[in-house]
Image 1 (spheres, one colour):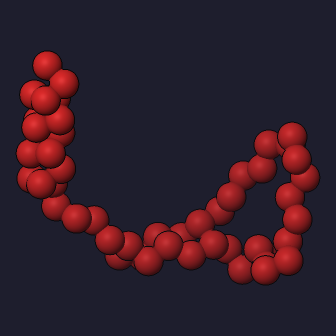
Image 2 (spheres, helix red, strand yellow):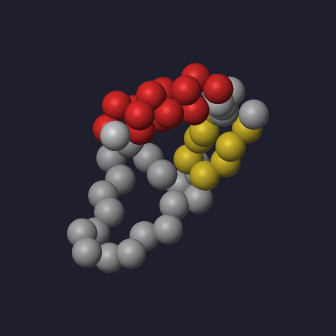
Length: 49
């Protein structure tokens, strides 16, 4: 049963087209930014593609 699942997953992965996009974070995020642990943070991003 595991072989069948693996084979089906491999066929599904081979049939799916590869998606690519340029993802970049908002400019307010820098190299040395520190986020507080345990606090919910929302990240803004932009996807161009």
